[in-house]
Image (cartoon, rainbow over all chains, first blue to last red; front, side, top):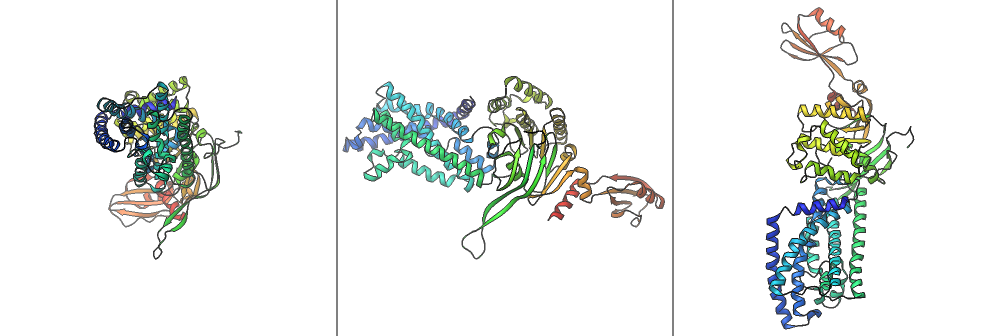
Length: 265
Length: 322
């Protein structure tokens, strides 16, 4: 119940920034259009690149734009609040509460993600559907699997952002690490280019790293590239990374109270 | 928990921090271990009001962080309400309250009422008890008109009262207050102290108060623990602090005419300003013989006595500790 209340509050807090939301949807759409034409040119030259046809490729573009803010791909979200609270020492207040820090921030980030999904996610998807006729999930099961995959994408992204924010316990400021992590995320999530296009060992590596959970896995589920046991394996891959990374977050938190000074008196 | 066990029990507590510092002539920074708290032993019984004071950097906050479980000691033992704070942090958090003068536990974007409602869920406070406590504290702290105001729009005093309500809704056994009156005006300070005293009287809530405002201590605490350089340099009643600190009372004498420094047995002139002179004598001595001696030899227009200043006493203790 508490965590639902926390998520609801985060949803409301983000929903106060209406102008920023509209500007964001506009930006996503502009990039969606640019990328769409670039991909169409690419698939015109090689119509089966990465096992995608041209409609798959354009759908992938708009899914990427829709996921960008929903999963807070290049950082930000409620983990920025955490980093700021570590820097100012206010994190002490969070630690005095009879509730785990990780669950609290996760609930909060899920609330934020829900808001961004309904605005920054839905907006570009509708525009992509109207302007570029993107593919929709072929069955209710596919849609449901995509929904699950999307939640897992947010959790994996949250865990990585939480780890990045935790570096503030040692470095006092997360910004350097955040920029670096954001660069990795853009490249290895398939945001810039679908991972299915990465050649040889680089492709294998990219598909095994946690960032593949961000865009590549949910997009492939939406496109119906995973079915049956393959679909279970794809979701299992995300679950595995979510569990491993959340455990790492918990470990880092324990280490922080053992090793580190909480800033300020 | 047995009846005889103190509520807070600290034994040989130690906390070191690793710091790296630059040393001239060396390329790598040198690892250094700093003793923030060491050899600290004290216990607090349920219902006590204890002032925990010391200069900046003495180890006050480090101690409080270990008492509340957000920092793990590197040596010694802490037990609070029968729990090991760092191991049972979440369980302990349900039984303690924390108030910071300079930080807020409230959510800046929420009205007070919603912040309190979130805390009710967080501490799983039974609805009836929650309503009782809320009504009571809102009434006592005069917060009725602010309940629907977002926290960011509250004045410092209002926010502070909101924070204190927030810390007490779950009936904590111990309330830690860190500089609770900082930045408040005199009237608000007085009201707050009155409230805390009543809380201790009526509910037996144990108070641990860290502050630089020694009037807080004088108004509230029967017992003071003074910490300096990471360890306790005094632990006892406020009166004992005066004795140990060698505190003095001051007799202010207004003479009819200017005169050379007064010479009477048992007192020393500290200051002369025109016809006014300041004489100090030991705090435990009676003022009567000094007053009589002055009146016998000089033309006195007026007399007054100043009680020892606890601030001076503590300064004296610090300087001796160093």
